[in-house]
Length: 215
Image 1 (cartoon, helix red, strand yellow):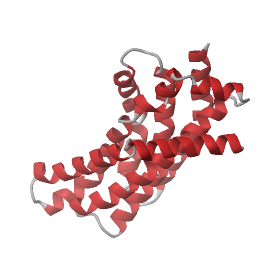
Image 2: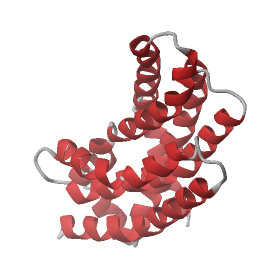
Image 3: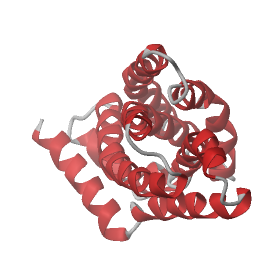
Image 4: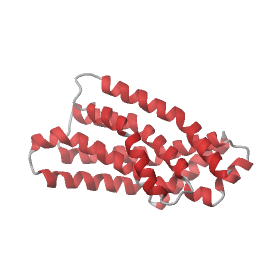
């Protein structure tokens, strides 16, 4: 357990220290800033479309750190050292999932809170937006870790990762953006179910991919 905690702490510290954590946040805020200029000052239009745009920006921001999640440590032999210390590939993938969410999820929620003011979202709409992103960010982090592990060592891994991740994340986008206009909590419940499924399978899928790359 101490080894897992140390790995998570190391990854989170590196992510925040290198500035990689803030790049998705800056991208997210930039996209939210540009959208009102594109559609004009129509407040009602911003209210109707703003939530969906913020969700699309969240999905695109997830693609930015893909090439830094697995490949650098794989090339430097860090994962081999972890295996020698007795950690399984699944445990390594689970630790990577937790550390990536800690360095990606909270900053994205903060960016969404700031960007919602540009879209005119407030009250219940803002609460639902933040709730849907809070539910979905672990799943987005899990997808990113899985895709990064599956494409590790391949040429053009970052481009290929983006092509793979976007269609896989569409169910999250549908129910996440749909929760803003739903009359009940059904969309959030479906979103939570998908998120739990992705988080549950991430250690096994990414772990198997890491094992295949090392072999």
